[in-house]
Image: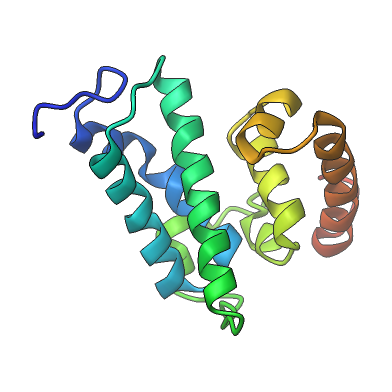
Length: 163
């Protein structure tokens, strides 16, 4: 099993290459460091255990995001009580290391998950509306609506029209 390749990458290369993507999805979706960490680990465990076939790195990345979102949803269902991050938590620095004023990660964390997911996938991961719809299992028109409403909510949280 150690020689298994995932879209031409070894397991270690996959973890290294997609660490930030999966970690960001988990943190933005869960808002609880310990649970986000569990979802992150479960995502890569599922990859290792299932060893699915992939058509390329984009397919692998989309699969990891979908599994991470599902893990977060399962965690939220199990744990109805979720402790929120403090706004300037040191743990956030692990996932959002840049203290640059154009970084809006802190504002994304304040959005509802349904908006947070589509905003993250669109603006951080650069997925198209149709790709986001496929990853999240939603209608493309629903994704467009969520993006529009999410952008409006993000403007009110972040402040201004620069979003």
